[in-house]
Amino acid sequence: MPFWLSIGCLSLVQAALVAAPRGFRLPALEALRSRWLALVPPLSIALVIGAVALDSASATFLTYLALVAVPPLAALALAALVQGARPSLALLTPPLFAIAWAAEGTLGGHTAALALSALANVTLGWLLAAVVPRRWLELGIYAMAAIDAWLVGSNLLQGPNAVLNTAAPAADLGRAAGGRPDAAAPRRRTGSRAGSGLRLPLLRRRPAAGDGAGRSCPGGAAGDGSPSSQT
Image 1 (tube, one colour):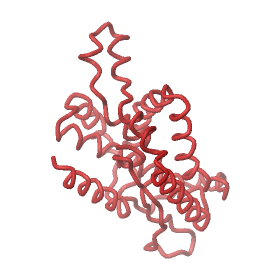
Image 2 (cartoon, helix red, strand yellow):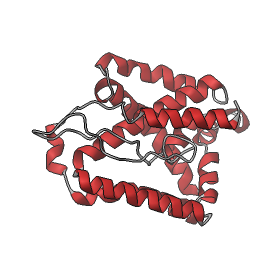
Image 3 (tube, rainbow, N blue to C red):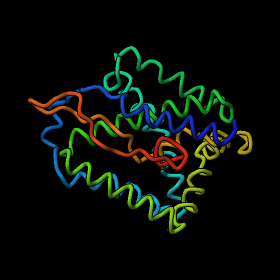
Image 4 (cartoon, one colour):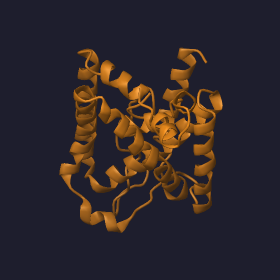
């Protein structure tokens, strides 16, 4: 697929995430609300890029973290958080993961990985919107965008991003299983996308008591090639 078409499709997916969440509330999260949690978006970029720049092995850790975290986060989005969500839709997660894993390098595999990463980011963004006051969340997202722009403009993002793109837990899994590393090593982009995919999608603000339901909260999901900090 040509670059212009692939980046255009990715941008459309990111834009669609604005309308994806529904007004789902979890009262148990009210006790966790804090303005300090607005630091999560900017720190997610600064700490990840700094860690990968200092020690490339941290990129492999992030891919393993994403490999474990993305499927349940995506399942939660399908079960409760996106428009039209229902518990039975969570059953779509295993086949999507299987396609992303088995068909790596194909259009179908990339599409499945993109869907999982986007859904996982919906869950992460919903969690932030649920525990951070609106104004502070906006400031945190603006700070995240400023850090991102500075890293790109100063050429500090490209190196760590390249390391994240090539990190592949599948190679280690192949060796652990006694298989040939070259046969088991294809990059599993689901892990790679969400590992650097700590950036969050633009999410509709969770309505507060007495609030209108249709207002939206600016948020940012930039991707270094994935629904989030990933490619």
